[in-house]
Length: 128
Image (cartoon, rainbow, N blue to C red; front, top):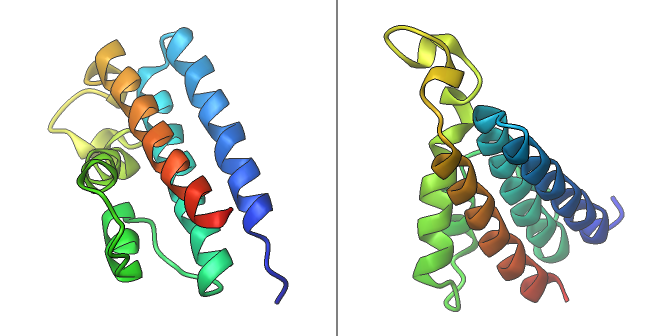
């Protein structure tokens, strides 16, 4: 299998741009989810570069499996926060009542975009 870390990172950056557009248009739940996807693709770019493929969606688990001694707490904390958005931002049954749009705020979306930027910046350092 060819090494495609550059493709994974390019898509991570494009997803981040989409998350920013969703945040700007008040689709806060989707901005949070797409930010999580952006972070996931950046982490998978690192796997492509170092180990090949990896399966899964939990950013914290994926990062911890790397066992990288240079991993910083801010990257792990960003992963913890983004992991919360993988399910609940998309499905109404993630909450007792209502839909995700009822629960996600502009601040949630902004935080998710910032966290994705943190993970992408870390990933770019690992891939380059």
